[in-house]
Image (cartoon, rainbow, N blue to C red; front, side):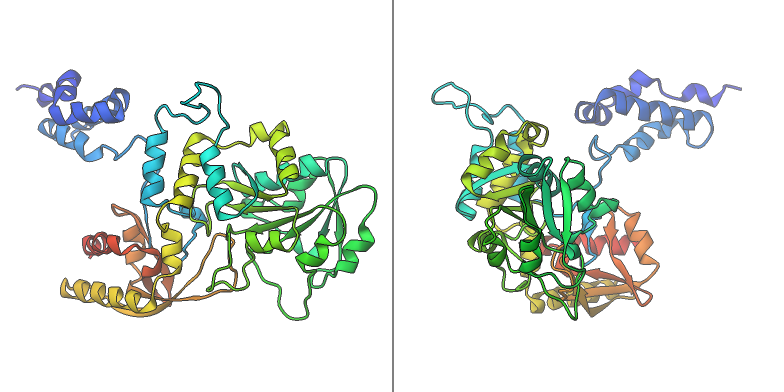
Length: 427
């Protein structure tokens, strides 16, 4: 009796199959060959039939070479750090693709000479916030560069209530102390006045640091020194506004913004690019032209610089149409409710226990703590949460009172059909 394993197709035969050959061109021959060998092993073990090898390979082909998977964010957290913070706009995505090839990132096509790196992104930042600007790889890097340039071997004066911890256990005091600067704490946890800062000034003062506590709120008997008063102390003031709001936003009246901080006298203002701005991860520095130039020329600036993909995405975010973060922030509640009702009705017609409910969304990403955004969601049985996360595409919602809520403030209207089909497949 013939051994059925002899019927297992040869590796070169499977790789020559048109669909698999095309995949090898896109994903790389080594990756696809490994999937072929694994399928052959399953056939030898009797897990699949020899004639199923090609289908097994095709079923296991990844969408891209990267292990990162596109996810539908239905959590109601607009800037979700664990899901990559701000999703880029179509314009920014197109700009990243274009920048992925050979570009004129540091080349002047007219003169044939070296040009200033990131000039397009810097010009876009100057149009958004008049003045000098510089870009590094994240907001922590922006603060690090300020400390290295303005306070190495000197003191940074900071309010005790602003010694914040950021993501994954990193703390601002530890970050700044690593530069060789000394932190001098003033005031108390809940109340700090300009007199506290003034009393701490001395010949070793590098700058006063004003940090917006963007991921928590202190309420009750509290006080903090206004930026305008700190600017009158006669020393540089570095303001970390954190969330990347360039100008005031009507829905976030208590969230500090770059333009106002500069108008109030801050020497340098730092912010994130991938939060409320809605762009790529980046640390943005704005302020006094001479100081920004000193920051740009510091040796560490080279280690902290961003690549051409970030520059392209940042410029497109600033110049292009409204990015998804700002669209989600400004979504009308009536439209969200209409979408939720339509989705719930469609799912119920498929026999799924679904209902449209009111919900509460948040900014997230260390921005606008305590600000609730009225929203609408589709509520499903709790078991759907796991099934949706493991589906294709993965959908991440949240559990509220033993129901899986899919909040539509963080789902683009164009993705409603995809969301509906993802839920139906789990039904």
